Image (cartoon, rainbow, N blue to C red; front, side, top):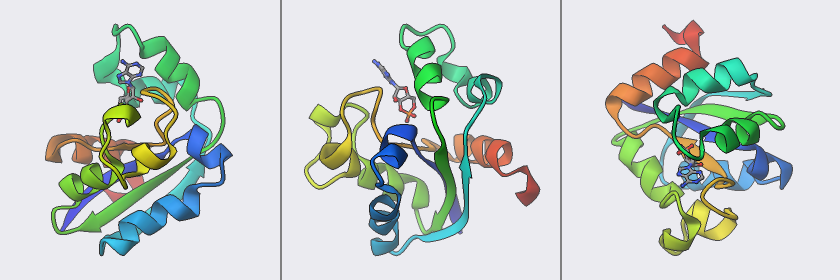
Length: 135
Ligand code: CMP
């Protein structure tokens, strides 16, 4: 069964949206198989977002993701990676489809409530990073 790493980001946790966001995934038949609250260090965040290092928004991204606790989870189900991405909506909430998490709750491209793995390879890398005990 396919797995994806999801982060409910600091902006969403601060707005008490954890329960609502998890319901979106559960309502689509996906299972939450791991879940943990964590305030991440800059070092850990830089590993997670290594592919974005050097981009114009990188510093802002690291500052944001480390500002307060987030909720990391592993979501499992058939086609979980694409299903979660569809539920989340586009990175930019203005371009996200109606009814998606980002369209409903995200403020902008940076404070966009959720992260999820974008491919099988990134799911494996990200799950290994966040939940090494699963290896
Ligand atoms: P995420 O799915 O966590 O993966 C990379 C993140 O970088 C993305 O969501 C956004 O939060 C952020 N991001 C991408 N593009 C921009 C941008 N142009 N400006 C600010 N943040 C961005």
